[in-house]
Image (cartoon, rainbow, N blue to C red; front, side):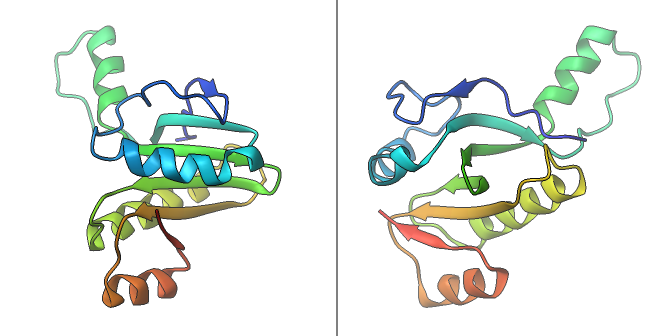
Length: 145
């Protein structure tokens, strides 16, 4: 299923990112302050991948809601002149953050929004040597902010 990016936001928008965890926001703001001038647009809480099958007996409206809430959710998707970046923001990031990004990339590549290249980036405040090793093997950069 093609990603549902949602509403585009200005790269410098300072409102509360939709559905971004409160603890993630300070990291996001630091990353945004360093890079936003290089961006075209930002999309928050973008839906990726296939929804889970809806339970039987649901109305069409309930099925639509079920499909919306059971898709994967990227913290942010950034459009730059060079292409797309799927972003995971996670304080004290561990292997689950890389697993999420790896999965987001796979679903995007299965049905991309457009032909521009897509990459991922993990934004965190610390990374262990093992996390850095795994990220390097997956080709996912980690940005410490």
